[in-house]
Length: 316
Image (cartoon, rainbow, N blue to C red; front, side, top):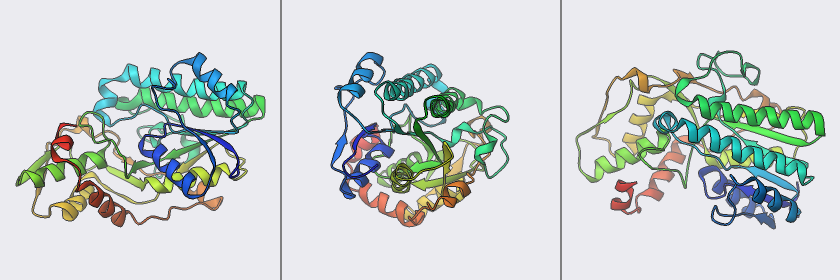
């Protein structure tokens, strides 16, 4: 990939996609192609295939997906498996049919078994059962990895898969039903501050451990690996920054509303996997590493949210 490559970025309005778009523009990539949903429905196979063929694209980046937290994954299992399989199938197979040799598929740490050894290495994929609350989403992402591996093997394509850990940053989803845990915590604490609440109640026990990474580091990894030859099809992208959910809640509270008391409902069924820490040594062996300080990233993210209209934020 070079600055003249015709790059189709699928999912450019999402958390990760928008970060990739910002970085591509910053690095002076000239031929970035994006399409909003109303102009190209990636669930429509015929339209997706035709689009990829007609636009003479050199590189496809798949940041488009249906994503969400535990509650959304648990409530909309059918949508999570169908939408994600359909989007990635259309883009991966459509790229092959269009003669596009370079593609990068973005997945998730959810691909690993519920009781995986920690930190999670790429070799742990499919070694035991998945977490039930997000199993349909995980299966779709695993299928994407295996599809890329299979096309590389059979058709000699150069399709790569990056598996980021829990990601946060600008343009995140703050919808109450669909957000991940970092934006959910930020939103709840901002609202508590605006309403002058003394305490808030959070789901689960707060004891589960999670690794997080700033979205701009995912964008950097995307461009980094598109420009390099690798013998590995899929690679973990993590920060090695890990705390309990309770720890994150208290960290965010100190930044936004120090006097707030954090309580948990102790419902273990809402905890999900007990620990999710990525082994990112493979990515580092290629020369990539995260650059952003996560404490400062959370502070800067809060600053950007302070100006957000409270009534709109409360409704979402």
